[in-house]
Amino acid sequence: MERLGYPSAADVAQTVEAHFRRHVALAGLDVEIPDAPSVERIINAAFWASLRREEGRSPKISIALLSQDRAGTSLGIDRHLPLDPDTLVRLAPAVERPGIHLGVWRGRNGSGELEIWGATRTIPPLCLVLEVVEPGLLVIKHRRADPEGKFANVAVLEGDQVKIVDGEGTLASECPDFVTRLLGFDPGSGTSDSVLLPLALSMRAHRHGGSLLVVPHGTEKWRDSILWPVPYAVAPPFAKLGELVGAGARDERFREAIDAIGGLTAVDGAVVLSDRWNVLAFGAKIGRREGVPSVEEVLVREPIMGQKPFTIKPSELGGTRHFSAAQFVHEQRDSLALVASQDGRFTVFGWSTCDERVNAYRVEALLL
Image (tube, rainbow, N blue to C red; front, side, top):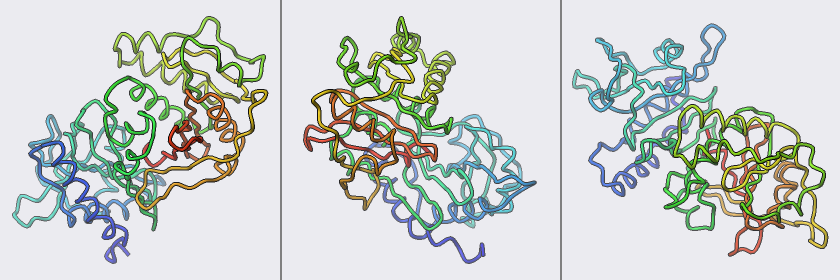
């Protein structure tokens, strides 16, 4: 079966090469662009490895296409290894921790064949990285020009389904800074991206599902769309995260504050967070404000090539959490609602002044 190849590898390789060619040119970097044959080779090896099991475990592997001299401090092996499923499965236990990548580059024998030269934690900007998330699920990504940022996803391959992230097309629409940051573009100002992104990852990680409402500071308008009494109103507001953001801290204390708030979203109801990152309440039930009609439809956008915006009833997105979040944004149009589903789907609700309706951005492909 492995010799037959993984059909999606050939389908996506040229598109991935074009993506890197475009973004390297935009960034003005002098780096080698991943060519389609190399991309296809890495995808094939990783896909077949992902379907193997070693001692009852499925491999979790991250592969970086870069030479060892670009990898900073790294662990090199004297005899380079072939890039094939057998080798990847054998090495997987040593590199399954987050942040460790197998380094792959053309062989020293002049054949041009890709070989595994070792492992590294240092990934330069716009270096192709392929991550095996679970059996049959692969994500192609690269680090942004900002080395401190999250990787920007390029493509998601799951079985015979291929999703190519369409950053430019999504940016042509009206979407929050948070979504543009997930697409790999700097929003230009503000810190919402650097807070909401790790919060979204934390919400998604606990797999209980949850809702987070981000409301403007200094106003009580949001209270009109919440059923009172709230079982867990926070008094005074929990300000730890806001203080850390204000001080520019991005250390372990920041991560602990993020996970503390992310954990609150596992409680039934929504977490209410001000846009200065103070926790105002959790377990809050969203209710329709008196005199405001129920939200009838939302415009769904997904930053995937070939996906056109479409209109549906909010309940069709996933149930009560999604309907409530859409209703909240319908009433509180200067707010944002993030909803994580138990199955890993993630939706960001925001009001569009162009469409004059609630937009639902399906962004789970960007959080893998």
